[in-house]
Length: 167
Ligand SMILES: CC(C)(COP(=O)(O)OP(=O)(O)OC[C@H]1O[C@@H](n2cnc3c(N)ncnc32)[C@H](O)[C@@H]1OP(=O)(O)O)[C@@H](O)C(=O)NCCC(=O)NCCS
Image (cartoon, rainbow, N blue to C red; front, side, top):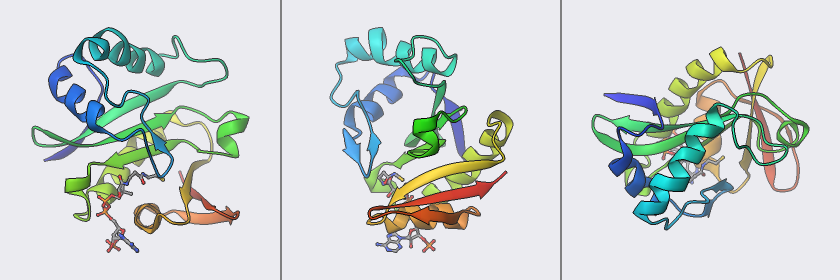
């Protein structure tokens, strides 16, 4: 079964290995905790991710953000993130949702299914009329994931497409 689950303490061992191995930055999807130690994951990274979803301890100018893992039965295959509403930098930048599927699980439809499930959650959280996403022009797989989920290209610049999905 494929399902999204919020970051939590109960799954710490699997969450730790997944986050430690996620790249620092792949196509603009960043991971500040790459290479983190087990101790630091428990004392800093995990509490930080959990606090962010409650709007606590956010860096200046950040909006609340929920981190979810995408599971295939008992295996974590991806991570999804949702910013709860837009500030100006998100409106013209990264938008509401970010996602990552681990390399070995790509090309099997998991990105499309994960975003489909993420959108159901997003519709309950996001106050804006549309869900905003952004994708690098050299990332056709991610653009396909968005288009498969009702996305349309609102505008583009030199490097990026700015995609929206109606709520
Ligand atoms: C983008 C990403 C989430 C896609 O995950 P995935 O599980 O491989 O996606 P899916 O298998 O659900 O779908 C991929 C779609 O892209 C298509 N695709 C893949 N590579 C492609 C390419 N080079 N050119 C065109 N389409 C491509 C696939 O054919 C598929 O579409 P289809 O079903 O119409 O055939 C994954 O590659 C990833 O995590 N990348 C790194 C992080 C990232 O880029 N995040 C998004 C930032 S905007």
